[in-house]
Structures are given as structure tokens and as C-alpha cells.
Length: 563
Image (tube, rainbow, N blue to C red; front, side, top):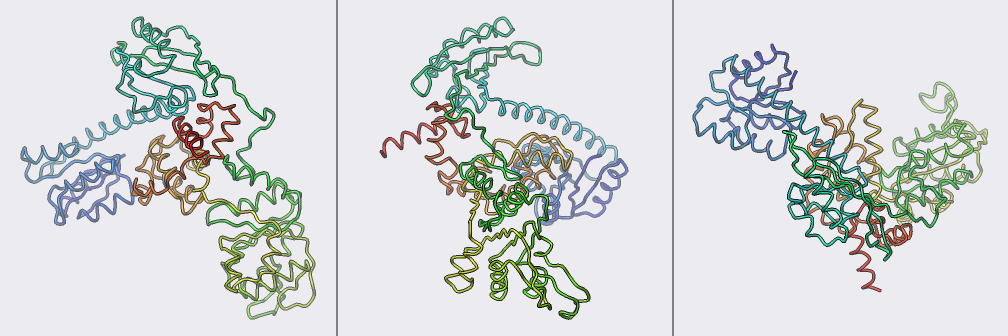
């Protein structure tokens, strides 16, 4: 069964198409104008689109052109009342699969649909193979270089940049034209693989290392065959065998703490602080922009500490008016106010011996600020409508995206409450300031949504990853998660593409991304740390940071000039 959209301003045409195609088991949607068609295309994915060449609000070729430019994964068949050669030629030139003439004949229509869907199935399968191969190439840490029979480079993977200094700009150039000392060692096994049609024996050779010493690479050349089983070229796999040197051989880097994820230096520092804070009942104030993971930090403090077996209670202080918030926090007795028909236990009492998260603490009223201050000072409270004090042992964790210091200056927040809450302040950086964590977070959400939606999506395309690294993420990690969830719902392949992303991200332009400057790259401190870990090996440092070796050179040379 296929999903088909029919766009025509004649009701009888729409009815005929819908009737014929529905009888064949297809899901059919109809639109009477270009505007309505665009709305339906924005809301759902279609396998096949039939569109009339002449519509009341424009030409069907406009829709064809926009679908082609957006690289939508659907075929387009034109409907025409004038099946002349010029019309057909223009439609094919713009990317149409075929056209059907009016009046519509059922046999002709179904024949076109069958051929179109067969063509799409074959194209989709070919695209799946291509993307799977691209994903495999991208995930391999060894350098992979493919050449044709004349040793002209036809492809390289990302690892080739760090190990060999080759990027995709080298495609189309002779392998021997690049100044690497070990290329001459590659030429003979490549020629042997091409001439004999079998893998050449692996060999090892030395090359200068980035630290001034000597590195070691292993080279393996294998033939590539075309559809007729004729040798069309060869593939070179170059493995960096230079021993890894670590200044802390016994230290295992931790990229996850509870449900928090990050390998950036700032997140690693937060993990260390959380490990210490989880062991003590100190009040903690978590600050940071919306979507940075403040609630996850509170959960980590509770579930990684001694109170993990006790209640973890949370309340959004901004979601309730003052009178309801007071009742929710402290509870009330029967008859305390209109509607209080029975006693109610508040969040403080429910969290006894556990942890209470006061989310959006920056939005509480002055009266509630005073009441909360007394609880923090004395460790006890009264239920609404009752004068008997109730003592509790609760660890308070507060969170806010507001600048409380600024609110104090404006007289909107009590300074004494601020310092009671801020025994330890933990600030979460926005995602745009820890972009080296984006690939790790992306992988985490891919695994999460594969389980939720029962899919097997392996990765995102290079242009999606590049967009993720350039985008400013105003909604932070939560926005990244929602973007990937949106993409999972739309994606029908094993790789997320630009077509699967929300419109606001697809419309994010290169001009906008250029305003991010060097923010997409690790800072100087992170580069120096990576160089220390790799004993000065720039190629390994580049792989560690997820950037090119040329970036490492540029950054280190700039520092030398400044110094």
C-alpha cells in the first residue's frame, strides 16, 4: 500500500483518482489547489504525488520544482489535458516521473502507479545501501581511500583526514600527487590488487608522527569490482598503529553520570561535583537555561546518594498560584479554606528523609519566599489552617532559569533566601557552549528512539551533523531531543536526513551558522588537554576532539604567533 496525494482543481478528477486508487488498497489524500497541497505535504510524507499542470492558483510544475529542490522522497506524475510534446518534455526536465492525460483511464492510471512504485522501491533500496555504506565508512576509525584503475582518488572517509591529511576535496586527483612519505609504499600493493584482482599482502611502514617522533601505519589494499565482476579500482585501508600514550593510564573517562551525558570538560567537572554532592545533604541551587537538564541533575543528586531509597518529590513552583502552591508544599487541614474537604499531605511531608526539587524557584511570590525561608532556617513548617509545627528531614534542591542576582537588584527576590538556597550553586552550560557533546547526545537519543519506535536508524547524515554543530540550540538538549523525535517519526530509512528535520532547522542558513564563529570548535584549553593526552600527537588529538588535523594545526600555530 502506498500513500498518494492527488492535486487537481476539478472535483470529478479528484474523485476518479481517489476511487481507482483506493480500490487498489492505497491511502489517498486530495487537494484542490497548490496551497492546500503544500499544507498536506508539510504535514505528512507521500510516496507518490499526482498534480495537474494547470491549477487555479498556479502551475503544477511549481510544486514539482519545489519538491525536487527540497529533495522530498516522492515521485511526481503530472496530469495534463494537453498531452503535447513540449509539456511532457518540460515536466520530465523538471523531474517528473511520467504524466497521465485527461480524461483519466483506469488502466493507464494503474499502470503508471505500478511502474512509479516499482521505480521508487528500487531507488529507495539503492539509497538504503548507499547510506548504510556511508554510515559504515563514517564509523570506521581507520583511513579508507578508494581509487580507480588509474589510481585517481574516488572517495575518502572522515578518518583519512586525521591519519593521511586527505579530505573529500582530494577526490578526482591522483593519489601519488599528495606529499605523504608512505604513499609510495601504497602504490605497489594498489597496482597489485588491481592487476591480480585479489587483496595484496598487508604491510607496515613508518611515517613521521606529529610529536616529531616516528609513527607506524599498516596498509591493506583490496580490489573493487563493478556489476560485471570486472576490477574497477581498489580500496586502501590505513590503520594507525602508533602506540597510544596517556598521562593517566588508570583513569577511565566517564561520559555519563546517571542520565546526564557529556564528554566536554565542563560536563566532566559537573560529574565530579555531583559525585561529591550526592554524598551530603547540602542544599543545591541548579541554574541554567531552559532545556539544559536541571531536573536530571536533581535526579542524579538523589539517586546517586544515600537517600536513593527514599522519596524523590518535585514541584513546579511556576505552575500554581500562591494559595495552591502553599497547600501543595505544606499541605492543609480539613476546613482550612473553601474546598478543603479533607486533610492533605504536602510535598515537604511526602519528601521526608528524601529529596524535594523546587523547580522554577525564581518565580515564587514574595510571601512564598518568606514562608520558604522559615522552613529552610528552622527545618519545620505548619500545614495551612493548622498551628502545630511539623518537623521534616528533607534535602532541598532548587532549580531556576532566571538570574536571581538581577531579581535581587530589582527588589523582586529576597537576598537571604537566595543565599539559603545557594549553599552550592551548580550552573549547567547551554548546549551551544559544549558542542563537542552533540554527537554523543545524538547517539544516545538515536538508541532511545530506536527502542521506543521499534526502528533501526543507525545515524544521521553528514549535512545533518554539520547543521547540528552549527545551530545555536536555544532550547538546548531538550530541543535536540525533540528534533530527533520529530525526525524519527518521519524517517522511513535507516539514516536521518535533512528532509526528516523540522522546518525551522531545515531553513537554518549558512549565513546564520557563520555567526557562530569558532564556537563550533573546542577551545584552546581543550586542544591543549587533548595534545597532552596524546603526547603531542596532533592526528590522535584531532580524532579525540572530533575535528580535522588542519584545525589542530591552525589553532596551535595561532597560539604560537600570539605567544
